[in-house]
Image 1 (spheres, one colour):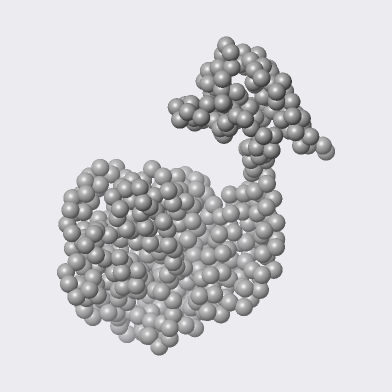
Image 2 (image 1 turned 135 degrees about the horizontal axis):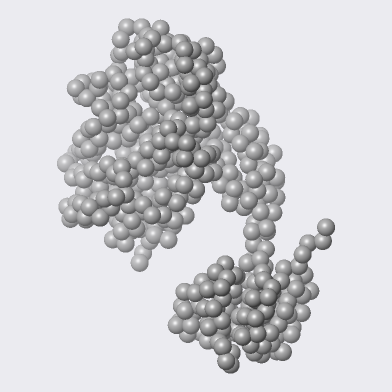
Length: 522
């Protein structure tokens, strides 16, 4: 079937002088109608829609800006290129304020006009085609990299590239290729589980060099930023790498971004991974030094009560001096002004660390399983990314970061762990005293029906845990499995299948971003 030619209306009182431009566009397959005044142009637009309007700014009678004003009322989504002899800032500003898609200054060449027209009318199709071609060319190498991945660095690098492809192909509208990326991630998850089972216990014991872990972030990345000026340490709870990828472009006008990856400790859950960030210690070290803070549960409310004190103690140990810390945990954007006021006050203290924990993504992830509406809004990874970006654009967090950039403050931005979309239930047998999380379990007489679905150990040292009760076993779900009890099999399957969960072993949960945001010169 022949593709319909894109229709262009060119409104210019000197249209006869533009015949070479019109012919150039027509030779490239565009249908171009030309008109010499704004009133006739509006009449044509009311009769028949056009894909693009090229509009002269200075015309006798109704000017181009006046035509644009009418057009925006009658057809707000019309795509318009303003062409003007004027190089005055006022004219440019007024045109942009009325949402032109491009602005050209006369004299223009046919090639210059074609470039703008092609970008506006064909840009998305060209980007889609180019993304598909680039991925097809890269695919054999990705398969080989997946087959050859052996080290934590190779897994992190490959996972990062697959996330980038997923985000790029989604943005280009190449939905058909997303399944191919997903299939590579599924294979990567399986091999990643083998890596963690084999090496993580050795990383915890210090018997083998491993990746940057949660316990290393403050020492390696925050402490080098400390000095006489305040520094921000921002933790967005439960942020996946792909969520970071869609919000980071919003920060680039304000910051130069230096990205790193770190591995969340296990379990990839707030009571453990976030304490590791703030303390620089594994659970058994915290329990030994602060026995009153450790109650052998997995309750966030009781285990994450001392983050400010943990960070203060870690900074003193690493620097040999008292470092002032202002700590805030933000659950809602309703108190934005109060939060910003408190931060401004804290910044008056020389060399302070402003530590901020934002819980929106974690609350959304947990609440999604309980809310049919939220489940529909964030039904998959793509929708979760979009929802995260929409929230971030209007969030207290973004406001705080923009203000930090404007004042020249450096920011270390990270998360404690990610989450994974779980599809496969696996039965676990446990006593009533077992922990409740769906991606990890601790308790006596604990075992998984399918051993390949979980990492199991009876040695708490494999996870860097303090000694538990005699006979305590530890299970962490692999890949996209989640634990269900045989007595509540159907209930748990129906309720939690297709839920974003965390606590287990997968690239999505463990390989997470940490970025140094350096304010751009103003």
